[in-house]
Amino acid sequence: MLSTVERGEGPPVVLVHGFTQNAATWWPLVEPLEKTNRLVAVDAPGHGGSAEIEADLAGGADLMVASVPAPAAWIGYSMGGRYALHAALRHPGAIRRLVLVSTTGGIDDAEERAARRRSDAALADRVESEGVAAFIAWWAAQPMFSTLNPQAARVEDRVARASAAGLASSLRLAGAGSQRPLWEGLPAIEIPTLVIAGALDKKYVGLSERIVDTVGPNAQLHVMPGAGHACHLERPEEFIRTVRDFLMP
Image 1: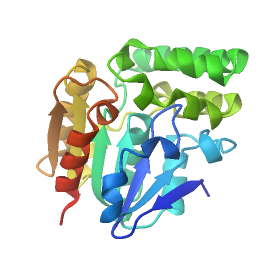
Image 2: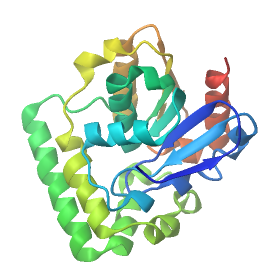
Image 3: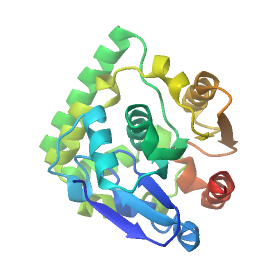
Image 4: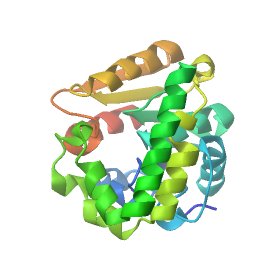
């Protein structure tokens, strides 16, 4: 079983974080949802309290479904969104509503995937050689996070709950380069789906539009103006308002 943290009461909402983050990264962002929902934040394989667990995206999605309430609404950010997509396709009865933030269905081109696998492997070597403090500081300083307030990034908290071996395993097994493209399967998702992206993160706006178009009429897109990849952390009030409206029965 994966490590989880629970707060609040009501219909369950599962929270799946991004790479180098952990379950605690969601607090205090989602505190307004505690009043109406049982929030279950999960530590993905290789992260936080699940640092010693090794799994690819499919296996990690299976572990998540086994570790959290069902049926539940799921919210996944970046890597967490890729886990959530796998869970929705592999266990459709476990998810009643799906929120994907800055997420992709995978890399179509085989050569591009191979190049990304090599890049992910090099990053895994880097975190093992440099250690988590240096690596996470470097990761958080990447251009895709340039519009994220350092306080909201919670780098110190990430470092305190991370292990080099865990992050390296996540990169090698669950990195974007190792992901089998899911695009052909997305039309099978019949649950209401909300896809969110930051307007400044143009690559993921395009990917989000493709997810919505591929899933079909059950999916909707929300683009946050003036926000980048970590749009939910950059514009928390808008994020919570949008998600709360979507989760309402």
